[in-house]
Image (tube, rainbow over all chains, first blue to last red; front, top):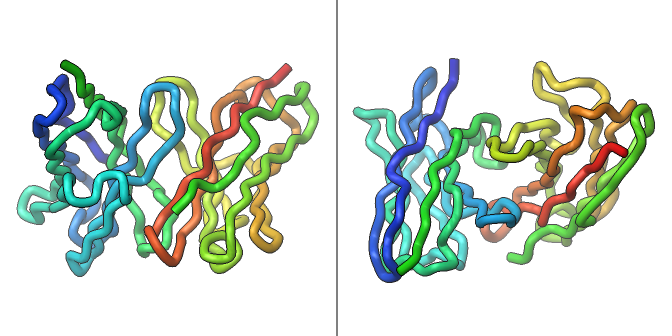
Length: 118
Length: 110
């Protein structure tokens, strides 16, 4: 059974850093196109970042230069390093799997809440 | 990359059919048949309902159907049920970002 489980969320001050993790089971993180999608309080879904099977990465303009997506194949885990955090980064962060790089996101984690506030 | 455009809300009575539109541009919906739809209940993760414009994943009711014309995709829910009350989001592959979501539509069952 395919499962995704995020962790690492919490309260951080503006300008701070946080690293999110997404542990996969029942499939290979390295062999899929793995994404981070976020949802601000009372807002819609916003795509954040993707790492392709070949290691190429893409980012939304809103996080480019501040966030870094990566994976550890030995742990079958996806990561999102978030630096220079802003209040507008406050959101529930979901990891989601895309099998072929064109969408859809067929499996999602339960989400982890990141709150950026002083 | 701007978000795809969805109506903020759509409502219908039990048993009726409703349609949610999702309007994009020639670099996303108009260019690819990679449109998907997601259902999200409060406090829950999104669930894939439709992929590649009109395909249903295993386990999704055949009351849900999708279509596309030009730069606009649509999700139709037939035989509306109380459990269908949720937020719905469209998404498309794009030639730029490479993914974009719609702003979301709240479906209310009257």
